[in-house]
Length: 277
Image (tube, rainbow, N blue to C red; front, top):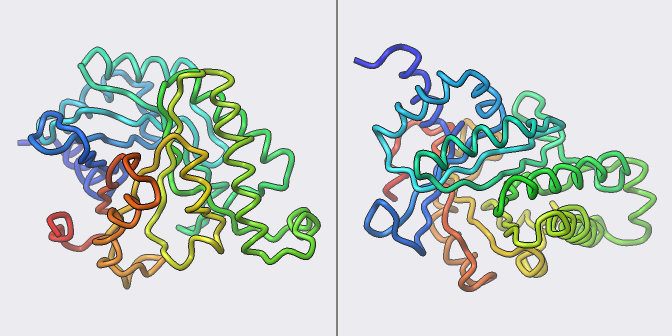
């Protein structure tokens, strides 16, 4: 029988504290897809206890054949240390698992409401660049989670916007940030790094939040698909679950041959049938 701690760990996995990717373009330990696990920064930091890392891996490895892990190096204003990055990376490489880095550019989380960084603030811009450089030093692939949006209307934003619409301003602002704060700085540190962006399933809200589905797939080396199927009534964004059913095909057309797969997220689900659907 599993211990209480292991049961709690598996619950965290099933609520997408560790989100699962299905990479349909390659065959891994399963016949038609590979599986990668995304490990958020607070879990990475908890691996300072090496016994916890081994115990957590033993627990998930018994349930799932994992081909790859994404080790999150940054979330909000937090960065892991060089030692934490290298120690966690070495553990998984020693176990025959591929590794990549991850970034989540939320500025903070207030009761489930995520605040974006302010991309006209020099301090914010410097930190984002620093995080991208850090990730590229440790990994040859880095995925940018779908927090890469902007909602701020600070004085610096208003001044920089000028006569543009907020939509046009935000699209241009994040195109610049993608190229000059994330991709170019990362490649200056590690020329062979592959920079990937994950887009959510926001459909009509992409442009107003700064997601440029025309230019950003060309700026980044690849994309990934947010297929979250959360409960439409009890979660903040009220996303209808059927919105995830066609998003993979949509994204196949904005970056042909460069869509790495879908992000399977059971967070805030009351039943698991949506996985199969």
